[in-house]
Structure formats: structure tokens, C-alpha cells
Image 1: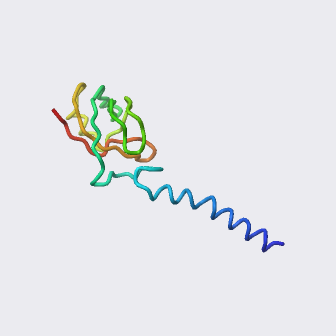
Image 2: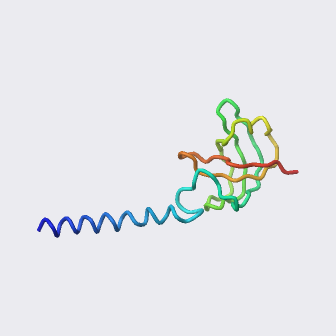
Image 3: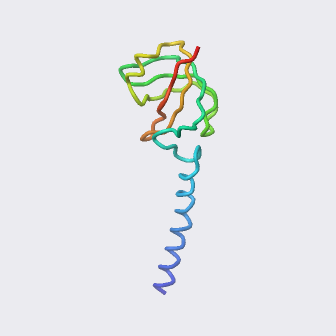
Length: 112
């Protein structure tokens, strides 16, 4: 009886763990990685607010590759020195990733 119970527990654990592992292996699905891949699509955005004390920037953007729809949202920035290069109204292109549970700009460039 103990062997049957142990085997059933092992099978259930494996069955419920496998989808979680699989979700992390697909780019753009599940949790995003700390750095964006070199081939990641750049997203067009408009800087709405630069908040240097908190190290964040508010950006109005188009849809993200991870399925997030177009919206205006607050992002952390990978390098706070970037905030000195941004101002309200700037048009940018960027890539973002989930870094320690917070959406973060991991690359950006100004556009005209």
C-alpha cells in the first residue's frame, strides 16, 4: 500500500510540475528572462513621465511580444543613467523583460 501511494504521489508531482517547466522554455510565454534576446522585437513607445528618484519611466506603448496589449505603464530601467537621456514626450523604441518580478526596460533607443 505504501509503494502504491508513494508512486501515485510521484506521478502527480511530475504531472503538475511539467507544465511549469515547459512554460519557461518558450520565448515570450510565461516568465520573461532578465535580458531580452538579441533578436527581440523593438517596441515603439512615447515617454510620458520620467521619475528619476524612483528609477522608473512611464511609457505609452504598442503591444508587447509577451502578449501584453498596448497601454501606458510604468517600467523600471536596467540602467538608471538612461533616465538622464529621456524626457517627457520623447519617442523611443525599447525591449522589456520581467526582472525580479518588475517589468523593466532592458534596452532603449530614441527615435525621431
